[in-house]
Image (cartoon, rainbow, N blue to C red; front, side):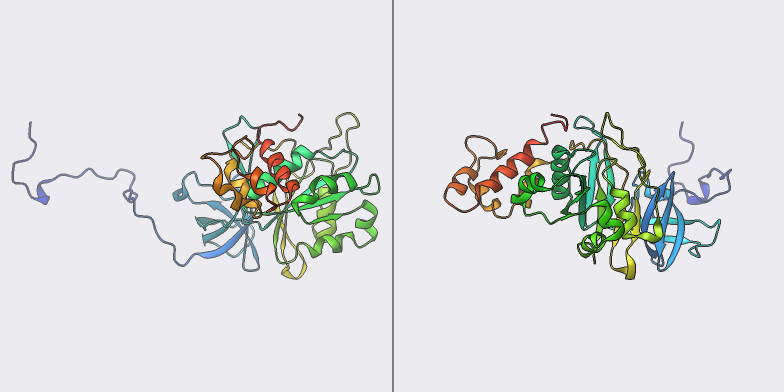
Amino acid sequence: MRRYGKHTDEDDIRSRPNRKGNRPRTNIRPKHEDAAEGMVLTVDRGRLTCLVEDRIVMAMKARELGRKAAVVGDRVALVGDLSGKKDTLARIVRIETRASLLRRTADDDDPFERVVVANADQLAIVTALADPEPRPRLIDRCLVAAYDGGLKPLLVMTKSDLAPPDKLLELYGDLDIPYVVTSRDELENGDAAGRVRALLDGRITAFVGHSGVGKTTLVNALVPEERRRTTGHVNAVTGRGRHTTTSALALPLDDAAGWVVDTPGVRSFGLAHIDPSRVIHAFPDLEPGTEGCPRACSHDEPDCALDAWVAEGHADPARLYSLRRLLATRERREGD
């Protein structure tokens, strides 16, 4: 039954009263053009610590962002109380476009990816030379994630007082990765922190490594005013340390010369989210040789054009071996 006549006027239409007394919903979102710019330093149970100019501001994500989450390193726009005073809370209303993104999954079968840090320039892969023993498979996986996410890798080898770095340097030498070797005594009394610092200036560097490798000790040496509780024990059976850092945290270097992002120790680094075809971009000397490859070439099959490219002298065979080793790590588990 028609409630209104054929020719109705707006005044004839009855509207339901808004019982809640609030404004009706709309798809038009405010632009927040006056929002302040900030950087996310750490995230803890829905609260985000941000740096706005020279103030530390606590914030929460605005409802309008939906499921989009802000992570450490994100450049964000904030509104509300930006004074940084105790018990004040601002709102993050916009997450700016990310220049890089370091991601991982719990394992290679896990479809849920975890964002480690955004907008980092460099990934420092920290590995001990002994106690615990180096895990090349984990290093390879971190390298693949760095290349995929747009970060430049840096290899930091600790505990050189317990074992020499020769084997690792031989394994990764053909990748042309910058590296630095440190010992605990050099970090405490020598110039090791200064040598590492020289590779960090002007950059945002995320530090990753499994527990017990001395990552937090290294971060403490680089940012002494932000002393963090160091790993006090390495299990003699498993070779793994207790987790010291529980959430990612961005720390400024002196004189605003860069940032260090300390991350929790990882026991695995899944690559379920990685597209292997993007790894070749980290090998500019090999990439032109892929023009003759068959479609969807894995670069490790009989028809791959890279074999002929290398045989003709365009690139070092060791570089092709390194590429294929990194691509294969996507198919292998770290303990294999």
